[in-house]
Image 1: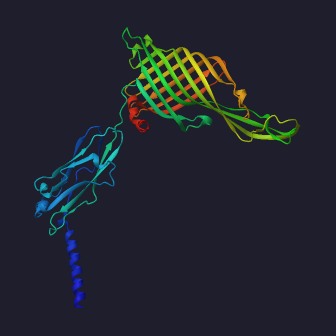
Image 2: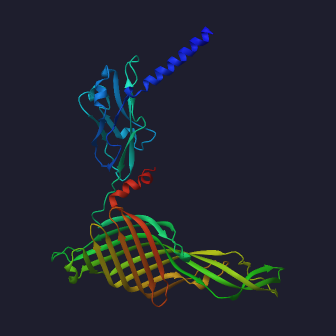
Image 3: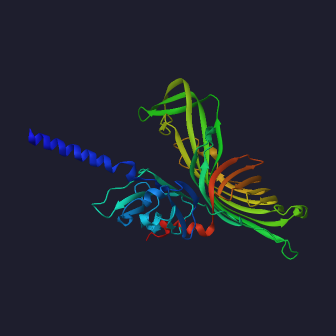
Length: 438
């Protein structure tokens, strides 16, 4: 009994000591003066003061041996997204004596510069009281879970001059009304407007680009045609016919170069941000065109046994594709180039009408999949091309649209892209993983 009583007494004493440590006398109201802040990150190092507020000046004054206690400010690594190598903390471990005569203490946070300041990061700081003397009573913070969050907002590099820009992005897939972004779009535009002095009346515009355009989506009515031939013997074969609809989709990957001299029109001197130029042009385009054939709604089947040597094996049960190359040389005799450029937006619209020399395959030569020979056709025509570019300078987001067609033999091409504009020198960093390869 005496042993049990002694154990009970020791247990009660431990509970009382623990409760004594957590009494209000052992809790200090020390906290971050600001718990949530943000500022824009810079490409050079900068120092930011962190204020620690003492809301218990009288209580701290009553604590014996203040030198036995320290306040420690540190980075909570698991919650912070900025690497520790980019952070320096100064004066973050200090004695409680610092609060004996004042109500605030400053801790200095230094963030190293970052050349890629467009990224957003955060820093989470935490605070604790450390006892240097094991025999001294423990002290606690009134808000032990309090954190300070510092948001480092990215600052995109704003485009200040639109004269030389490169673009990387994607094309809109407009076939069948779809609006998904698909396939790579790239371009480099050089716009050198003529100076307003009397001796510099001519500028130029140069564009090198690669994009995807849709030509047409056509559907024929019900037509009767042979869709399969099956050999029976050397002198007979089955010929299967049916009515069906033929859906044809043409999509082109284009690689082109466009150059145009610019002659300023006098009427546009009324507003410096808006200029219109007379702009004849030359353009060369190589188009790699994918033509997809899809047979739909096949009906009214009929089979005939023919006594003759089979001309070729034929099976249109499956859809098939053809890929052909096309070339176009356009000389725009009549052209206008409009440029409206301010610190908040850049809008360019240019259109050309003129002579076109087109070298492309005759579609009648590849309407069936067994035909391996594609006959090329060269035609002269009158063409029209219209393009529009809209660039927002802070993000570099650019929308571009174009349409091209010919008058005598209409072959329209439509395209729309979404891309990001870069200064030409910035592409070196973007393509570094590629250019660094051996």
